[in-house]
Each structure stands twice: as structure tokens, then as C-alpha cells.
Length: 143
Image (cartoon, rainbow, N blue to C red; front, side, top):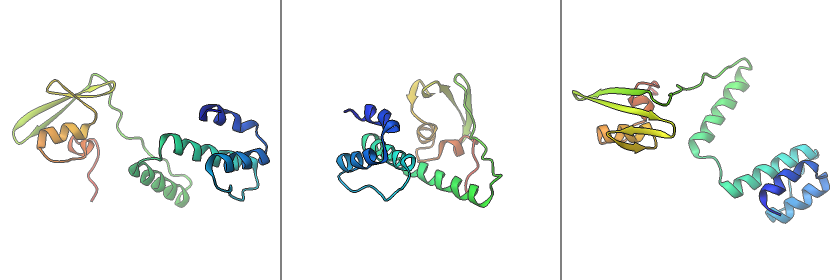
């Protein structure tokens, strides 16, 4: 059974079937979870990590920070980062030269070259690594 079909079928499996599938697919004993729903979620997560890889470090850190903030203050509401609309331009003057980066649906354009991130554009402009959102003034620099 493919991973996609298996994930879709987890919802209908019993606790015993989930435990057997865990052992068969992951080669280790499942955790001692007593609820079917929790074991199904844990198995789905493990299978997805195996198929697609784990979250990158920055995403893990961001999630940990959000969890910490929610634990400390249940009314905490995170604000989303800036939404850049396709077709907009970001203008930055750097060392007396005006630079324009265009926002595309799937990246950015600088001097006719397609780039995957604002950080790439900032590096092209400055010659050094920068956080693109900080360089273009979309996010405050951490102190």
C-alpha cells in the first residue's frame, strides 16, 4: 500500500491495527498511547516525516516559540508577516545606488534575473548574506 493510501486509511483503523502498522512500517514498537486518535496522528506524522523529511530548523524554532507564547498567554495572537503581492516592487537605496526588486508569484526578479528569495536579492545587492526581509525594511532586526 502506498504512503498516501495508508495515510488515508489510518482514520478507519482500530487501535490494534494502528499498532501493527506502526511496527510493520517503522520497525519499532509503537508508543504506549491509549487512544486510537493520538496513535493515528503520531503514525501519520512519522510516515510523513519519513516520506518528505522533517521541518527545517527555522520552522521548528518558530513553532516552539509560538507554543511557548501560547502557553504563557492564552490570549496571544501572532501577527502575520508582511504579505508581498505579485507585481509590487521593493525599492532600496544601497550605497548611493537605487535597487528595485519585483515581486513575482513564485519568487522575485532583480535586474532581469529570477530569484527564489529576498535574501538572494539582498546578497546580490550587498555582496554579503542578509535576511532579505530585514534588508528591505519589512522586518525589524533582532537585537
